[in-house]
Image 1 (cartoon, rainbow, N blue to C red):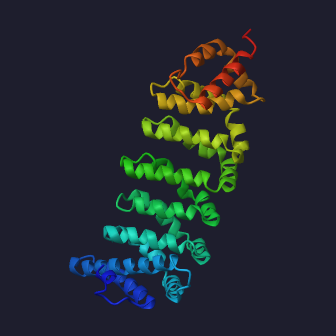
Image 2: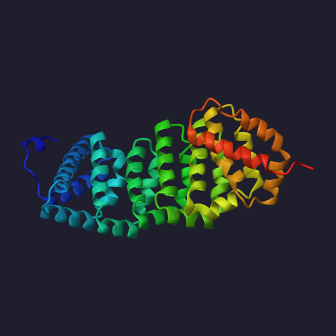
Image 3: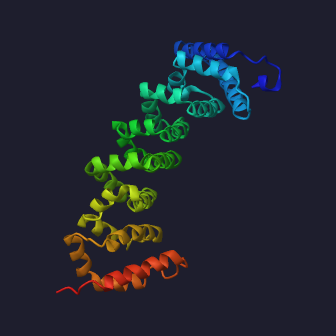
Length: 332
């Protein structure tokens, strides 16, 4: 990156993109020649750093930089976005970071969103990037930025690859699994209306998979999935989904078991789902029957549930649930 310190001439955008494209082609042809591949990789690193420099300078300036528009045009003309993502795993560490920065800056332009909508292979490659620990975090960072665009979020939601996240969040590599869960959460929460419509239309399939996360042997997976479930059910956008979920007696039974989990964190997150069943004024008959059957046990349990937690909202909610359960009819 010596050019940043003035020892190398700043390249014209057309030259930058052409050199980068040619270097990527060289890497494709040089699988058996590490020397040629190394030189190409070094050039790509230099050029990506310079692209990032141009874009960063533009972001900090009040005046429009003609080089930026020219850079955009050249990148689109030679499918550079697709090429960079396809070769991401071969880049040096800093080049991967610069690719993310350049990509995310490009996403601010409507033309980039239109380009990715037409070239959905970009989104496919970003999702499947979780299968390669060398690029997983970089792909995740770009994918989360894509999800902020409703047109791209819609494509992700309706892609068959979305269901890969149910396995990605349980990958043995902790950093990759955590990043995958962050992206999965964003898919279901950032574009609320789109996600709500998707969950409602695909309820059976999604929650069949989701049940496996809630009952996973992996503690982190269970806790994160339970917490996200609580957030989804309490979001007004998901009213229809919430209504369906809390009408299923198997879901209530699962939450009641999780209330007694050995982990206090699991118990606490289960409470926030359980309270939705109890607070529902129009309980389904099977739900009401289970609550009535377990009325005395639930009262005793809740009276001693997390009494050490000094949190006003939680204590108020617990008191409310106790009142609701106490008002239920006694079992006959």
